[in-house]
Length: 458
Image 1 (cartoon, rainbow, N blue to C red):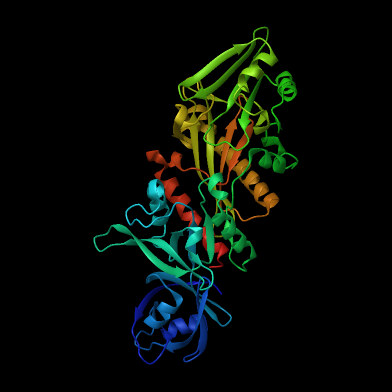
Image 2 (cartoon, one colour):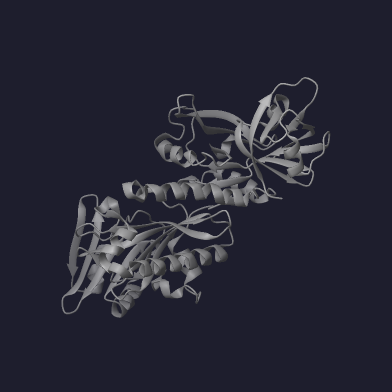
């Protein structure tokens, strides 16, 4: 049976602990007056009785006694879904975003990241969900409750943070912010609990490792064409072999992000090698005559075992600067992968990467493709989108864990071939700061809720 969107209200009643439904709602849910039923919110359940509300024969308003609201720890009324599963009437879905750094501060409950979570939770408008933020230490597993921050509308049309105790959710979205945070004992204990708890799915769990993703995808015939050749250890011999095969290679930290630590090496026939990278002081370029001298320079303060060697790709250029794409992928309510955003990132002058922090510029992908490819731009966009969906499917199938979003760094070379350089399970949202990508930002946040509803079986 599909879920039904209703308006939930609460009232006091001395003589009964029940849920009041209109006759039409009883018919939709196939419930009889005075029928005993189990009400659930997230992981809490209480016995109740169905009361037919004849005063509102065709209403989608559902009234619940305050005693039941307290027992279920329902945080607020308003639009929400009802779904009958056997003798259980589910209220929800309850979607929890787990993170660290949550604190008792009604103005900045997640510190510097509060504004980002504010935007995420704004997507709940009109969706009919309970949506909240919590940290692993906020859960009481004995009572199946969690202390959480909600974003609630005020009388003047604004929103404010409210701290409430509610039920452990139907589904968890993992936004643990870093690998260091992943190693905290409370985070490890929380995830172990979830893995052993029945029917409490969590999606986008953990972080990807560049080499781990490469090992998953490179053997797969369906996506191998999009994956650059890569070696897991930046030994001198591996670097030498790759530079003999390719004019350009990249040395990348296995667990890096935001372009930190990336080194570009270009073989210049008869003139040695050119090495480029970014430091706090800006972009650096150095030339070397031998493999050993460039290797000693690059790894004087870096561990070769922490780096991989990757085939360089001659990217297409825009205004004489290379560009690639951040392709933001999401699962929708039907559990299908869709592209929510394709943003072009154009490299800054002299930069090794296209990241904004090193002078890169963000442009809506369609705008850039139109300017370069003219009337053929929709075909190029479809080519990138098709590759992205194939890659997303392959990552999810090989990893075996639920994924609701991915950030893929992709590019087109000078021959028109599509490449995928990196996959992120916790993609940043900085590209959405571009004014022209506001609609894509809203779609992305909305799809996170849609996929959560799918996982929660709502």
